[in-house]
Image (cartoon, rainbow, N blue to C red; front, top):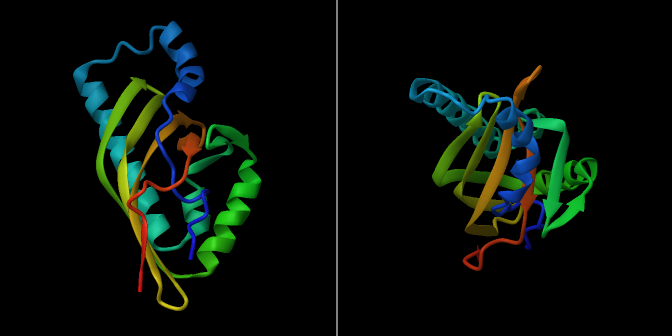
Length: 168
């Protein structure tokens, strides 16, 4: 079983610039340590809940963490968000179980309404025949607070790290 590239993201920091330019220009990036800590805690809870939704195979819940207008890059190329969601649904429906766990990560608060989550996570996908693909990857999400609360507004996805392997 091959992991579709849509499943395993990789680092992408440059895309965050367009999301932080306006808040930084307005002086919103001047936050106190207490404000940064509160926003960091909020982002940590948000991302933990997103990973939990992925583990439970609840894609309706998982996609609720993303803006309907999420920008998506796969291997550095702009891709269609609606098509990505459809492909993810097809892939997940073929699986018996999913395990996604954040490993090392950091949260960088850029403004009161913008943060980056970047780090590594482990994954294990078990198909209906019991074959398991496991490995680790890295991702950066641009997360923005708006009318609908915190949402992922940008993600970059790439091939799995070379450690991915199939286990029988």
